[in-house]
Length: 223
Image (cartoon, rainbow, N blue to C red; front, side, top):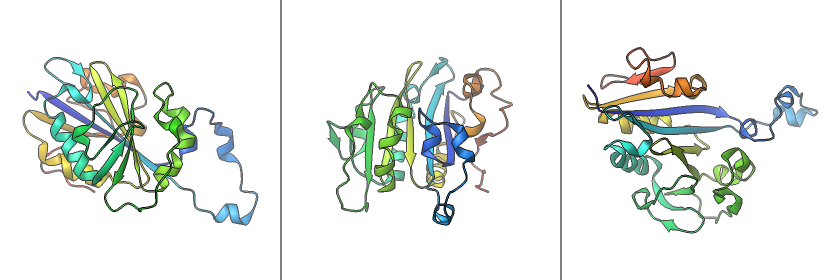
């Protein structure tokens, strides 16, 4: 029986305003008032949630499995990290992070435009929920930066990443080679994991996962 279970939960084509605390769904049906508004493309984003389960100990959190360090190294390579800051500390790679729930890290990839991006300090406020930070996320994301939130889990923390581009393929290719008899990897459509019961599917239906919860095997290929 596998000891570790890794969950990569993804959502694409997200409009940030639909995640905001003050979002009113009635506005989604509002028709454009001008031709210019109608033709203007709507910027969308992707997010990725990294979580894990120690199946032997029934512990939950990205950092509870022994493979978490290896996953972080692959995350760093996938994001091509040049530097990162949590508002007070700056580091040159993810392995230097001192992760604490409530933290926000802004990650700059190698090759990102040299123009200095001013990040609103509200983004780093550990007292504010992600939904309260949506309005200050757009500028750094549009500039090609990544935003990584450290979320409290039952026995540690999880990681929640936002990006402008859909970079799912990078993660799939990075983590598929880790699959083994001790390590199970599930790729999960976030639209299907909207309840706590579904999020912790491994506690009640591990061998018959819900629709949209796909286990990645060594032979699995991207469609």
